[in-house]
Image 1: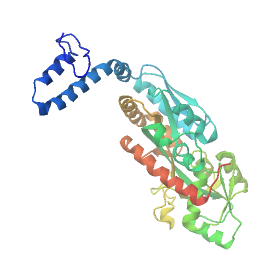
Image 2 (image 1 turned 180 degrees about the vertical axis):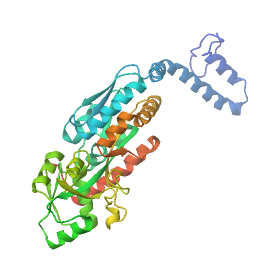
Image 3 (image 1 turned 90 degrees about the vertical axis):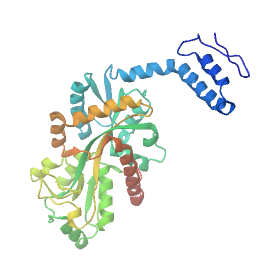
Image 4 (image 1 turned 90 degrees about the horizontal axis):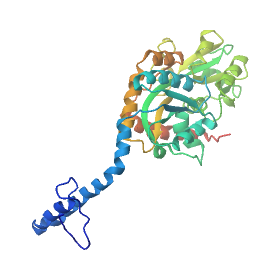
Length: 363
């Protein structure tokens, strides 16, 4: 055995073996004094890595073999809602791409908080994912002072998923056909307009508050328990305005039960090319949309995240996903996977400012 000691007894490996650290350290002593300290530190670091390798190997092998068992994708809302429908379409496509079952697990409750907590507490191995929404990821942190998760700290961005335009719709008996006409009507009838949403602090509520702030629109908020109830209120005339995503709303527009007067994105909705955007109707740069993204628990290996990101990107082009997005009046979120973390950071600031400006408190 080779020997080298410095202030203690050396622990040596057999000469000629890959871990012959004593032989390596012995060579240090023969070098000039001004190089010995640097060489010693390099050799010691190499020995430390060799000692750590047995602990790193299982994780590396797991990442290399990923996926080796079913993947659970947690959705924070009940079956049948837009996020659930899109998640299930992705799961179908991913089954074929990853050659392993991808199971949608609905954990509804508390504006998506329950689902986020489940994924936060899961093992960071890529087998439990959050099919997140903008409400969960960037609005809840502004609504709840003691939220049980921190989006930036507790999750790793995996894949951008979808963008959902919002449509400004009015009761069919309200005599307005555009945003300027709505603003004029509100000025002529102060204190009479009410707008409905699926609940306090959700995207449709905040989007309307942002529109009110940008235009001076006078309208009182009536929160409902879910968007379907708000749309029923709109049809019945209990509220005159709703600003919501199109999955359940557009069939009512097409049936003539409500009237669409604007779309919330800077680009028009391809299926309704004559419907102008809010920005085109006198509110420059106005853009609001709901979105979905997939996240994993913080600490998930980079190799696993890379595999998942590539699989979701491939799934996004599948027929089953494209059909699901079209049915929900959604399209792909125009963000690259590498920029998803920055996008979430920017959206967090934007929506938290909206919450603060409207002085919204959760129920």
